[in-house]
Length: 256
Length: 323
Figure 1 (cartoon, rainbow over the protein chains, first blue to last red):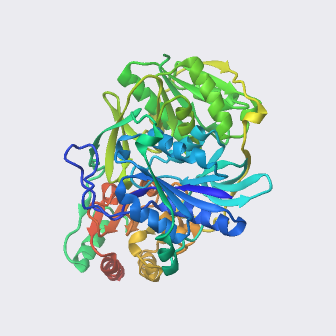
Figure 2 (figure 1 turned 90 degrees about the vertical axis):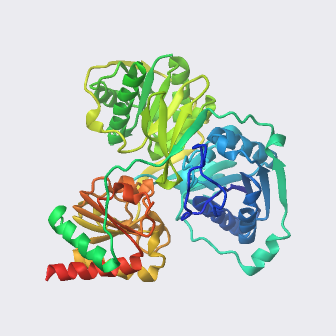
Figure 3 (figure 1 turned 135 degrees about the horizontal axis):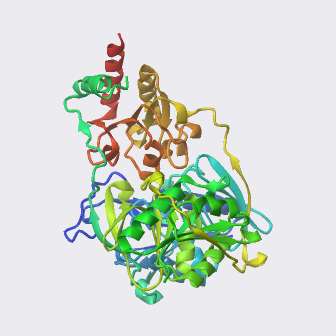
């Protein structure tokens, strides 16, 4: 089975984000970046499928030069090779624009399966994989926790709301967006890190893929959210703050 | 162009609560833009659903009905709505932001050369649509550009179902052309995961644990706090994903929805998937080392600090207060 895993590099979870001077995006200088969490689960699912059924795992990502370490991390965990769409204007493309880039890179590879995380931790749109399926003309399913290969295609477990699930059968080739938590993530081994250095990373520019980049959904402004409630922050050392909180809960909120 | 169309989602034979919220959003968008607002129901037998929705202040309710729409599939729903939209040419299509909508609305929009502005929490003059970025740390304002319908989905709880105005709408039918071979996926009946033995939904006191707890070895300090309070222990998704607490203790969109008197969030940053699950809480307390964590936007009380120090101190203070 040939599997392509589309991954994204996003700001680290605990990173302090600041709005840029133009108020259109975040200040990227000095930010630490990491592999998007649900993409890590997509990669894990791909690696486990390869271990069971053989084949090849190719990671695909779009972004500027800084995505290099994230690609190496995926290769160190066991992906066989990588395709990097070199693209400095990722932030100004909408979900359709990014999916068009990915689709153009996927098409000549003719994979049996395309996996990606269900959403990115920065924009959180959760659309790229679903649109990618549409552009490739492939069936898809989203929010997948478990993938089983069958004689005719795949049986997958899809998460629904409030603790419900559904099993879905679909033919291959197909696109799946993977929910976090379905598998246990592996760490890169020392040997894996060493091997990653010799694995192929093919770079293709966004211009070479010749897809239009004008967004339909335009992000015009980024702002700090307005508080829904006025939070009383209780000051002091832990002991003082805790005592003050108990007083408040007892006599002000009256919930104790 | 034919105004605003709200896509209704069925839940147990009735319009889901978030669909009613989407109607309220559609009515507000109508007031803002001066357009008419209508609704579309989809399925194999939509008569009762259409009748229920037609009791709202809407121009029209259209039953998009076909035997192949009995079970939800992305292929079936996309085909049906694509044909409906091409016939009706709406200005706006408003969806409830559900797991089902997330599965097909981006595909439908892409097929029509559009992009869904998803998980919208509000809108303003323009119109510009506001949605959250960076796990709720920032808001982004989006504008739809170009020709064709603007696709929007609204976040659960962002609009109020009881603000959907009542009225009388005319009901009509739309029959899409769908062939069995066009539906490529085969869904089964839905099923429950592991038996739900922990009912967080009716608990009056809950302590929720998040990533800030850092290590499963630290869970007992949160458990001790819960015991001192007489509270149930819950968790955000990553804690359950890691197996540090069982899945049945997960709070949020994929877990349980809670409405306690007191919710104490420990080391929870407040991603939207978690916040939608705690909206019914009467009093929210957040303990987090990051003063900018989104959880503080919904908290009544907060302590900014290292939970490894604050939580044991709070446990002691509660024990002392009880004596």
